[in-house]
Image (cartoon, rainbow, N blue to C red):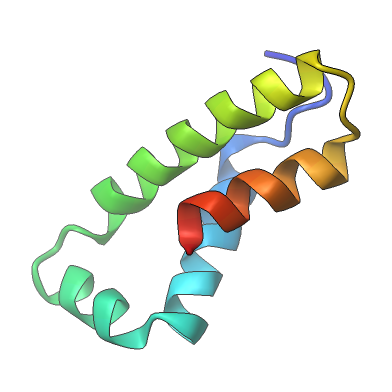
Length: 74
């Protein structure tokens, strides 16, 4: 794992918090269908892959995560 990348658990929490506060209908639907964990796991993987590419191009960690999280969550 790239030492500049955040642990998956941290990214998972950020996505979960975003969904719970900003996308309440989707959050409730995923909870009801018991698909929230799988949905967030998929998003974590996408974010980490995108961040890896951004970091390899010289971007700072905070900027890379902000861009990746925004692209996945919006």
